[in-house]
Length: 293
Image 1 (cartoon, rainbow, N blue to C red):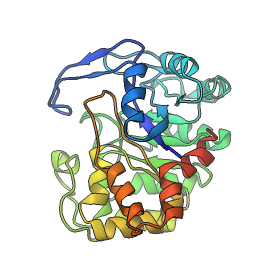
Image 2 (image 1 turned 120 degrees about the horizontal axis):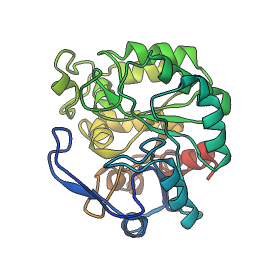
Image 3 (image 1 turned 45 degrees about the vertical axis):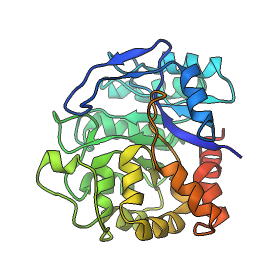
Image 4 (image 1 turned 180 degrees about the horizontal axis):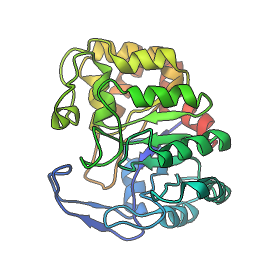
């Protein structure tokens, strides 16, 4: 069985992305045909497109484009819906419409406000009722980078995990994954947005996973890869312990991007270090069951 990638980006027509403080090298967002071929070369048979919102943005396409790309590649591409940060009173109607159009979840949620903002809370409330998993990107504070915002230690995320027990929250991005270790930076925005290095001292991610059964993890990009690979012994124990709530993903947007976690998972399974049952859950079974794809 080929892997399912629960986090990719594509565009109906190639989009050139300029360099920025958050993406220091210029790159591009590819068309789906290019991405599908690239993913298949890595043993990935299905993938879920992340949306940039209800309208297209300069670097990320929105719900309508994601829906069209998925419709043009049935059984291979699926899509999540996203929301522009306005009119919280209509979120339920909008989310129902996107769900009925085929959206399998909400993501990549990145409204640059504190998690307890009414708009974000309404998205969570509606997603819980409609059983739409939410994948989020995180920022250390509004106005810095992009993503929903929380303080060091993720207190606002914890409050939402408690408030919406029926909602599957998929954590993603550096600000989230750095919290896997208790010695993660707590003051500087730049440091809180960096990549983790070195031995893991079990931190808030494990604590929240133990406390809240509705916290799941998106293993994509270098943030997810480094969280597991920085301390392979701890990473393996994390994979085994939380195998039911981890989903393989890459965050790929063009054929030049590859991430090390897929090969690491394959190698662990091949030598028997990661049990086959855990490998299959992380690689594809969890995604298949959660998103019904």
